[in-house]
Image 1 (cartoon, rainbow, N blue to C red):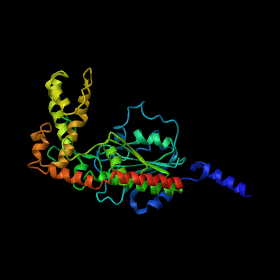
Image 2: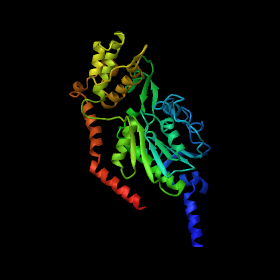
Image 3: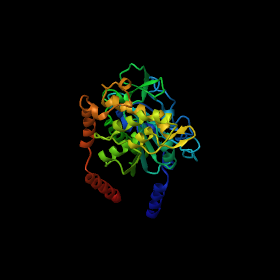
Image 4: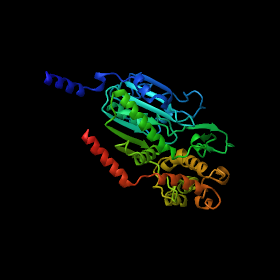
Length: 389
């Protein structure tokens, strides 16, 4: 009798979760309780992007203006072009939960959780690049991990994306040097220091671990953080600040914020200033403009026909990013009157708040960083604890 019972228990443990029970919204929502607001939880026939219900339509939130919530656009910005993305070879039935994080005083923080029925016992928590939504990683991260059985969670750094505005808006940034469209990024509003980004990565991990336990009956064996660009910054900071939550992380080209030069406000202006002269030279790598850009720390340009690697960055990244950080840290500067390419970080130190803002942001970042030895010690203890379980 006893061998039979032991065999039955062993067989039950070896079965995939989906064969034993269903992951239910009722259990997950009961566990997360009042930590979430406006939850939308549903059983999904497929958690991959082959299912159009996985990623909501752009501007589908009630209330925010166009541009504030753009999931379909967001998932493409850190992913390869169609045909070169993660192949979708099977459907992944399970549960999807979209919600706001109730504790956020701005009402902008959002959370996403996907629990595949056939779970492998592990959890991946994703950061978001730029000022993108919690659906930013749907192509780049989610499609890959849910097909392998991972639970997947994401968040939006506690902030919506942007709203279109007029040039007269003190926080307006044009989308590129040739654009007549101006955007007001929510990330530049009061109450949105970038140090919140790590806090919401950690909060998402806590919520996800609770949701996983409610859905499957036990906590994940391993939890990993992943992220690209600003999402990579989230990974690095979250793993440093909460090593007890994470077993590892992938910081893919993560942003590095430094209070001292060189930094983003010293390196972007030379590229912005010199690029028009470089174009006028016919993309001549020996031109003074090209040499000035390289001297600022940029790799040599790659030119194919009329397409320039630097040109792609000039059109999509350099000026709008410089504007965002300048508006955040030195809002008194006349962005377009005095010039984006002629912004001089060092000269602004003597009569602006940029140094104080940088010290405040960076000081907070530095002050709450645990020593590496502490991280290593906690990680070793976690591994030992897991080995004992």
